[in-house]
Amino acid sequence: QVQLVESGGGLVQAGGSLRLSCAASGGYFSVYVMSWYRQAPGKQRELVAGITTSSNTNYADSVNGRFTISRDNAKNTVFLQMNNLNPEDTALYYCNAQLLNRNYWGRGTQVTVSS
Image (tube, rainbow, N blue to C red; front, top):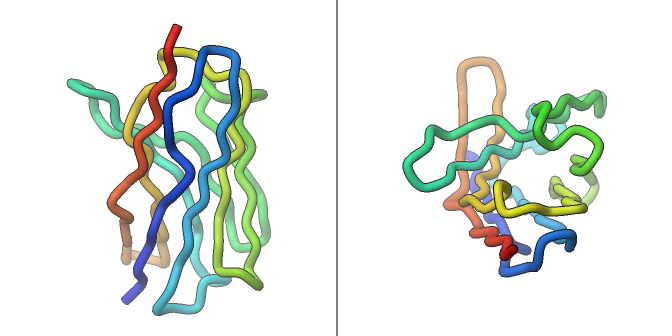
């Protein structure tokens, strides 16, 4: 069983930056594909960025070039660096760990971008 705890969310002005962290425990972190998802009020949860066990990355078109996902296997942590934020990025951001058919979720961290 993997436990995930997100941190780093907050209120920021448009054009600003935030760095989200997701600390994992209870499993072998390095074998999991790690991802960040987000869910805005009234919208479905969507994939923001993912990183494989070999650190290949993928991004949603809406964040490509602004967000960067990375992982530190020694610290069992995945990060999401978010730059040039805009109000459309406002959402609850969730960390996800996936291994085969197993999915684990954190409780989320709120990101609010003011215009």
